[in-house]
Each structure stands twice: as C-alpha cells, then as structure tokens.
Length: 65
Image (cartoon, rainbow, N blue to C red):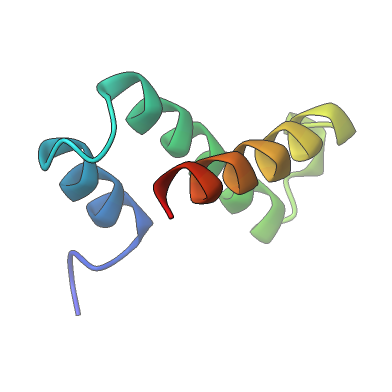
C-alpha cells in the first residue's frame, strides 16, 4: 500500500503536530541511515551514528508514550 512507509508516517506525525519539523528531519536522517545499512552502504555511517539513532529512537518513543 503506497504512503504507509516510515516517510509517510513521519510526515503525518509532523503535520498533526505530534512533533516538530526539527524532529521530523531527525527521523528522516534515521530513515536514511537505516536504508544505507539495509543496502550494504556501510561506508556512509559509523558506530557513533548508529548509537545516536538507537538512543534517539528510544528517547522519542519514551517521550511519545
């Protein structure tokens, strides 16, 4: 089903005011990192970026729940 990926959900949450445009951009960066990993593009990120994504995702979930 089109429009149901993380990009669409991220956009909908920002438009609904669940979080700010700044947070939306951060989630988009995490999506790009995840896609790079899924496609084997390991040279575009390092351990620090993965740790920041994991920590940030956990913080976001804790904030929203």
